[in-house]
Amino acid sequence: MLKGKKYLILGVANERSIAWGITQALHQAGAQIALTYMNEAIEKRVRPLAAEIGCDTVLRCDVQSDQELDQLFADLKSRWGALDGVVHSIAFADREDLQRPFSQTSRKGFNLALDVSAYSMIAVAGRAAELMTNGGSLITLSYLGAERVVTNYNVMGVAKAALECSVRYLAADLGARNITVNAISAGPIKTLAASGIPHFKELLSAFAEKAPLRRNTTLEDVAKTGLFLLSPNGSGITGETIYVDCGFNIIGL
Image 1 (cartoon, helix red, strand yellow):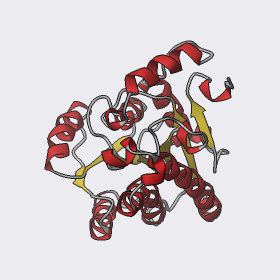
Image 2: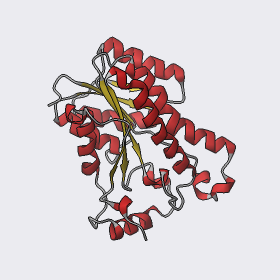
Image 3: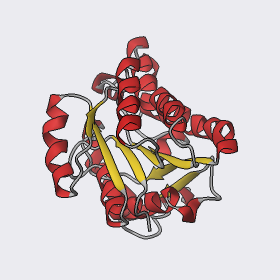
């Protein structure tokens, strides 16, 4: 379905990453993949995964560095010439700002969370759009904490709210170029990023108990939706936040 199409994936940390689930789905559909890593520790995890799918384009990129972002897309232009899609699966907040009361969020911590988790999507989208000469698709990953208060999610909830709003503005900005921009709001999944959220195990248990499907969200659930949005099948959808959370978001008390 996606043979000959080229996709950049940012945010694979290990085999449990949501980004890795989407990567596998794209690979199985015939897509050509480029992966990124932030530092040497992440690179050691990413390269063996890249080898599993025959991916030989593994590039360094710290999204807080405009220089590294510029270099990433210059490398992609040199290697591929054009780009069909991007998966943005990057978020970070200081552990201390997740553990303390939200009213005690530090200025430094707030700026860090918003920069890495929200602004990076804007920075990536602007550069990627220049390579999407025949249109394309961008997706990012969000969570219900962007819309509702989730215990211990704190500043990350504000960052995800900014991310979802950015998706809508990017969709309006890039739509004339036939570029779609969407967010997937996934249910809680055991990932490296989730390990920084206090009492995450309790959150998973409560989720499975209350979600209409009576189970937790899986990587496969999210990967299937990611593949749909990144493929021609999702061509008429843009500016949306799509919940892939076993229906949890519809439940009240």
